[in-house]
Length: 333
Image 1 (cartoon, rainbow, N blue to C red):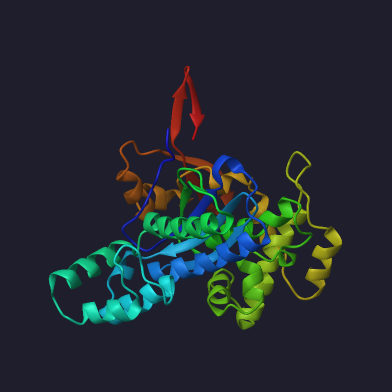
Image 2 (cartoon, helix red, strand yellow):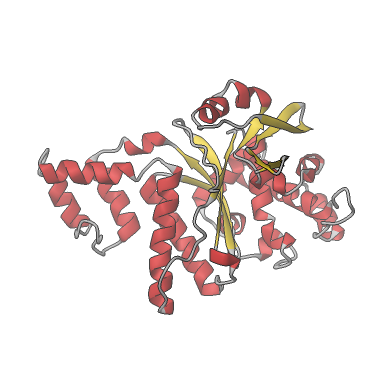
């Protein structure tokens, strides 16, 4: 059975997970570098905002804000987005480069111009189309470079709809940026090259603004990123209830604390890792029942019910999960 897909017709945040086919370890240094480049190009084309990301050797996480209104752009913006994705090359589906597209659109309401606008706008402002663009473009590069054929990614990507509140988006972002530490690929989040947090530290202004929005307060972007770092280190230094999962050295956490960060929010990250990825929507109970999360769930053929998880900052944080019946047992999706 395929993964359930929940999408909203409003501006929403999605936690997306894409896995390499058969979970093979195919993403080396060069492959991850190119993937990051492809991610940004696909986001600019789709009109999406990448909050953060992390690409590992056999899967990738993306936290992305998708606004359907991204389709409402004029011809000049269509050409800019087209060029952001294809560069100076011709797109195979229309056999045009950016100047050729601009010329075709400048003809007004001709049949070709109408077709081009419709085709381009249909690929924007939608999480499925965003992922299709990213995965297809990257797969073409991978197969050409490695002289292989066929699919690179598992059949479907997983996506979790996340309530668009700063503290909750920041919570999921920190979970994503901690992936290399949990996988034993780095001692600290900033030591891993292929993550949104590291790229923000390196100077990517868009990622800086997105992460800073999650931890607003004094000190501008620098202060916000410091608070965000403590969220991650707090989670990494805290063991799970069964005593496992402690990955960040506590001395590193204390050193960060002495540099002026606050630790009170790290307790929010005691939630288990699967809380952020097993499900179809994540938010407060009211949002899942009567807010945009509930409206999006209602569009599903068989809407899942919200399953309460843990209370966070006096809010009933819940995840909506689909349940499948197997031999009389009800299993979480």
